[in-house]
Every structure is written in C-alpha cells, then in structure tokens.
Length: 447
Ligand code: COA
Image (cartoon, rainbow, N blue to C red; front, side, top):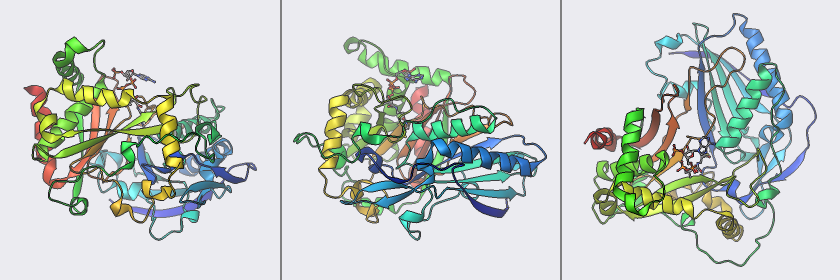
C-alpha cells in the first residue's frame, strides 16, 4: 500500500485559552510517558472530502478550547520534572491518501501498515519543547473509507482522559455541544506541592524488576518482537473465570473478575512459553485507575493521569505449578492495597525523588530503566474504557484498537467490538516465544 500526499498543519484552539505553565502531578511523569498510538477505521465518508477535513479541523479547534493543555508543549522544570507550557502551539493534523481500498487490508490488526497510518514521534531528534502532544493522521482510502491514527502523550492524558477528549471531539464534529468539560486542575493529585509526610514506605514499582537468571536485561531488550491479537469467545472467558473460582472457592466471598482470571492465565502462559527455570523471579505490572479510590474521589472527568502501577511478583515455578485461582488471588491482593493512603504514599515517595526523569520513558537512559519484558510482563485493562462508538458524523468506526506496540511483555485486555462477551488480548512478545504462547494460551483453556 502506498500512502501519499501527506499534508501537515497545526490546529490551534479556536479562541484564546489560558497561557502559562501547568504543573504536572508526579503520577503524570512516571511509567508510560511517551505517546500512545490508537487507530480508528471508518467505512464511509461523504464524496466532498475537503468538507470532511474542514469539519474535522474546525471541530478539533473548538474542542481544544476546553482541552487546551493538549495544544501545549512539555517543558523541563527543576529536579528532572516536566510541566505543560500551555502556549496553544497546536495539534499536528496530517492529511493523507492511500491507494488501496479498506477491504484490501488483510487485517485491521497491528501490522507494519500502521506505521503509515499513525504519525510517529521522533523523541531522539526533536527537542521535547517542540513535540506536539497530539499528532494525528486522517487517511482516505480509495473506497471512500478512512482511518484516524492518533498518537497522544501519556504525560498529559491517561486512557480515560484521552478517550474523553476523542469522544468530545467526535460529539462537537457531529454538531452537538460538549457533554462534559475536562477538570484540568492537577492540584487534586498535589501537582507542584512538596511531600506531605515523612513516610518511608518503599514502593516496589520504583525498584528494578527481575531479570532473566544468568542474563542481562540488555540482551533481552535487543530481541525482535511481534504482536498478536488473541480472541477469547464468551465461553472461553467464562471457562477461565470458573477455573479460577473453582480452585479458590472456600477462601473467597465473591468470584474473580474477568481481568483477574485472564491476567493470571496470561502470566502462567508467558512463564511456560518463555521456558523459565522454576526459580526464575517474575513480575507483573498492573495499572490501577485511582479515580474512585481517593477520598474524596477525584472530580468527575479529572484530566491527567489517575493511574498507579502495582506489581505482583512470584517465581515462574510457583506461577506455573499453582492453580489459576492461586495466581488470580496474587493479582487481587496487590490491586486491593490501592486506596487513598496508598496513593498518597506513592505520590510522597515520588516527590522525594531528586530526579524523576529516570521513572519515565522519555529519559535518554531508557535502556537502564525498569524492563517489563522477559521474564516480566504488564497487562493493562481497557475493559472499562469507552473505546467503541466514536462517531464523527459519518457513522461509527468499524474497528478501533491499539496502534503499534513493540515492547516485549506489553499486553492489553479489551472487549470484543460486537458486544457478544468476547475479549481481545493484544500481546507483544519476543518472536521466539510467540508461537508457543499462542499454542499454550488456547490449549490450557481447552484442557
Ligand atoms: N463500566 C462497566 N463495568 C465496570 C465498570 C464500568 N465503569 N467498572 C467496573 N466494572 C466491572 C468490571 O468490568 C468487572 O466486571 P467483570 O468481573 O465482569 O469483569 C467488575 O466491575 C469489577 O471491576 P474492577 O473493580 O475494576 O476490577 P477488575 O478486576 O475488573 O479490574 C483493574 C482491576 C485494576 C484493572 C481496574 O480496576 C482498573 O483500574 N483498570 C484501569 C483501567 C484503565 O484506566 N486503563 C487504561 C490505563 S492508561
């Protein structure tokens, strides 16, 4: 496929917006701090494509009046911290054309074609202060269908916030009024404040996760990776949940969630497919949405990162030889500890760090930062994110999904698009482990 005639422009907020430096919370600057790609495919567009582009741009410009931090740029503050320079520099909007029909694509699933449909960010060569926080590309296919590839900075918006922005943009594009304005003040998560307590709790997510016995994480980081999108039909999902419940029944007040059971299954499967020694330590990174865990809860539509990572740990032999319920319980136990007090102690620990940059991926010493590839993994839930039904005025998407993700061990769980109870598990693994992973993943459910 050839994608051509790329035209780039900056879309700025329609009217004057607040300008100045917006303090970021510590939670904005740790974990995933680069841009996160997603893609939407649409079957139809009106013949008058120029009007479509104009409508998308003018509605984006209106939406940015409310979401103006997205039109700003990051800048460095003291002590390895970042802030948002709300300067209305704009969102990068690319227009492009593809010489194929949508139906010519073999698959809507992540493939090298995505690189042509979602603009990427060159962190190495562009000064941080010049990198747009949102870059997007609208590509028209020869059949009249189109794709919207988005890449949004995770420093500015987590999954909930990014999807809030996209859904309000779609609403305004359809000619409706904004439904809920974002809550932009990050002081709720104590952005810019000094640490509160002298708590000395050491949070495990700030340490380095285990590495493969007898090997450095560097050699693992260099391995070629590949992505698979594994589908679980509703009966397979229920079977996994039952398998988890059955083995832990006497100790539980209520059954495991889909996330707990499926993540446990992914963890067991990855330990098997990676062929670990039984004494191999392994860690699982879980992102927990804290919006309703704070007291009081965060304001409705808090815009930023309201995510805390927790880590479940074990040994591969222990993970593989115990029941699905045992592993699900391990996952439940670490999620359970996240409450208001826990989050505040995480924020305090981060505030006490002299240099925060080493906890994010923008750091140039990235290669030495925490590595959640082999023997570790991270499973992020998109189960409660409103990812489907984004209608810009020409119909709902026929496919929405994550863009390219290339880090070994990175995995997501999302609902299938048809609302039939099926789930999709996109997972990135080293090429040498993928075939075994796929085989064991389904084999163990069918046993
Ligand atoms: N809408 C519909 N269902 C919801 C819901 C919502 N807003 N919130 C919770 N539920 C459902 C869940 O789907 C789950 O049902 P299930 O057992 O049928 O699967 C149940 O209520 C319990 O949900 P929850 O308390 O969230 O537990 P969990 O085990 O499903 O998930 C976490 C645990 C930590 C993954 C989850 O709480 C979380 O924080 N997710 C983060 C989502 C996120 O922000 N991802 C993007 C990161 S950038």
